[in-house]
Length: 257
Image (cartoon, rainbow, N blue to C red):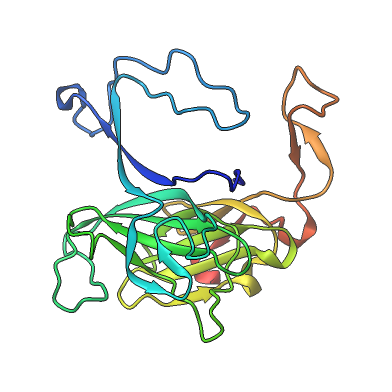
């Protein structure tokens, strides 16, 4: 998802369901209300939440990183002032916790992991340690720059956790050689592996994994535009791209990568 880079404050939000008494035995619903009127899918309108949920910010764009690297110094902004918006958030809970840059430090068990959408080979991934209140250890950078000062990642968008490999998968929505899939080990220190050979180089919006380890990809760029609105058959108001041959597989298995 590409958004305006003129936004000055970037925030990650954690949604919580309330009240607790409304939850069923399986932990999901029933909920008492929906969103009365969804916002239009244009521009950057404010979020609208069901009354069953509350939203509270857990990080802002100017929050410092525990382990800054090169020009990557804060949660949502480069030291140059350029914004690198955190896109999809993946919430994870590990009973035994996760380690980080500071040895023997207790980083807790609840984490919010997000890829930061940006160009110029400076997209990156952060981990918000939700149980930590100390700002010196609150946000951990998982993708430090290399010797050339770059991460060589671009337009990071979707993310998901792979329980079979205990790693995170991230998509890049850039076109051509700016797109593709990469994998980050959840253990510390994190290691990054690109999966361009198995998946291809194309714009990918999202990624999900089923209970058999099959990886499903949502392509963001492609060939001919096709209307996705039955009331707008000829377009061009609501158009989706047909997949290109370069990255048209519906799924890949975990073993394939």
